[in-house]
Amino acid sequence: MTQIAPISPASGPEGWTMGAGKLPFPIKEMTMWRIISDIIDHREKGVLILAHHNADIDAVGTAIILKRTFPWVDLGAFKSISHAGRSLLQGLEIEMEIDPKVEDYSLVIIVDSSSPLQVSDGDISSWPKHWIMDHHPDHSHWNGNIYSDPSKGACVEIALQMAFLTGAQMDEAMAISTLAGIIADTGKFRFSKPVDMDVCSMVLHGSGLKMERVLGMIEGDEYFDVSKKIAQLKAMRRIRFERVSDQIVATSKVTSFEAAAARALLVAGGDVVFIAAERRDELRISARAKPHILRLGVHLGHFMEEVGRETGNQGGGHDGAAGLNGKGKADSTLQLCMDRMVKLLAEKLKVEVPKKRDHYRPYHDGRGGRNQNGDRRQGRT
Image 1 (cartoon, rainbow, N blue to C red):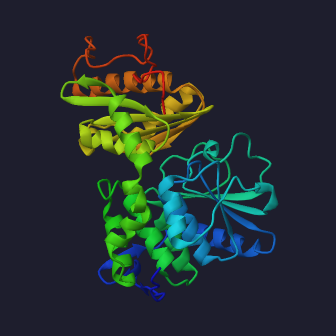
Image 2 (cartoon, rainbow, N blue to C red):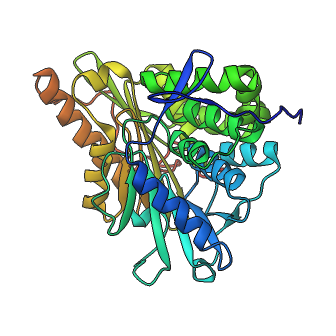
Image 3 (cartoon, rainbow, N blue to C red):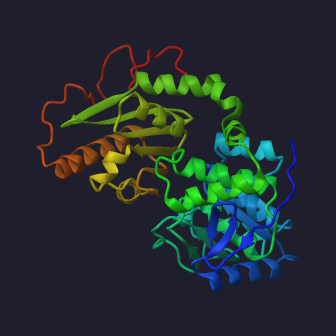
């Protein structure tokens, strides 16, 4: 990996600047200083940066920035790391442990997580002291120390603020992680805010990085990965969809790459899509919506949180990209998502809920010779 020289930003009246770009000062600077002090004070006893289940690029990127700022911290993720997250770690030659022993540390910094269920199977009251650093709007599920800034499109921006507050220089790993986190969490800028574009401009100018290099690192060989391509094609084959006026709500199932499959179904014609990945007793659902759906007043993060409550799982996320993690059957949960979204869109569009479901076939259709996905029973992968 070609190294760039670390660089310090200029400090202006409203934040840090490089070129025409800028990163504003923290909205709660004293709270951020408390987190910094705790990380330093707990250095000898151990500090863990913990990312959520199936840690995505933003969570992994946030952890990497904190690792570069405080080299003594360890990085961990609950249960798994996403394919793209692993690509980022491998490209930067940084390690992140899956399911680290939280009790071995005296301080845990939980990043990019809106609920305890995203980082634990149960009660975390016995955990060592912990802080939550996040950019999602709702943290009512947490009790304790929280630093939240929903004005940012990605959690990496908060981590970069912390780095600059300590006087750390921006090195290549921090620059790539920042750009990758913003690209990923804004849907490749589809849902970006002005501050996100300002930060990207600052990082690109200061680092001299090319955007194609960042995209190559987080997509890398996965763009050509046969498993990923098969997952997206299977999602197409297993699709169920319903029309509400001129909007299409679609659902499907895969065993992995559910986020990539969700993006593929949006491109294919879906306006709101729900893709489930069910393995053993683990259930994940990725939900995505196009911008015009959000302008109707639909917020997928709130929608998936309600679905999570009803199914005993944890859901949440952004307005246009959200998810659900937990347990249960994909079929019934997807059916619930479909029914609820069809009803919601009918209300927003002021039309009747469709009565004729000629495009939508319930998952349990009982067709002989095939399973509930529409695959032949023999040789299912």
